[in-house]
Length: 71
Image (cartoon, rainbow, N blue to C red; front, side, top):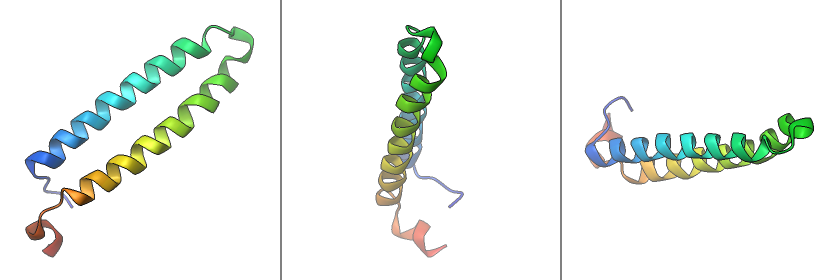
């Protein structure tokens, strides 16, 4: 699926922005406890990141047009 329609492109842009916000917030909140920062960061960011990828993968596939699925 190399050709994205306009709705899929907007969804990808939204996913990118959401991932950057998640990354920023997870680093900020995990920095509060410097001794446990790596553990807190991974414990909070990895589930959020996986959830975001799975959600947007579903959304992008739902926004796929019939012409794209034929290719």
